[in-house]
Length: 98
Image (cartoon, rainbow, N blue to C red):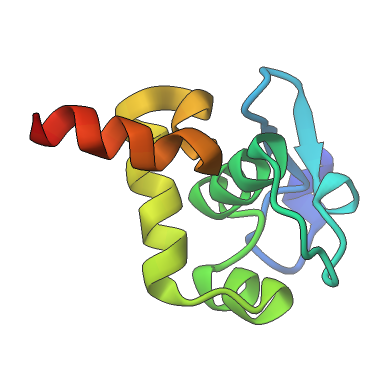
């Protein structure tokens, strides 16, 4: 039997992270994170999608808005981890309009 079978809450202990490795709650960025690099954004998106954190927990823990988190999800879905790079986002948006 797995350890999961004995846990009282339905949350997984770990999920597959954006880099293919195991991602646990302890691996997530600290709650006071202010500098959001690509990897950290991808970890939070993956944690929520995998059930490690609920959306409400992630928003509260990191002080994010739902719109901000959804924009991360959309960028991650459309462009992978590179889509989470904020410095190129404006350039990418301008190329789409041209």
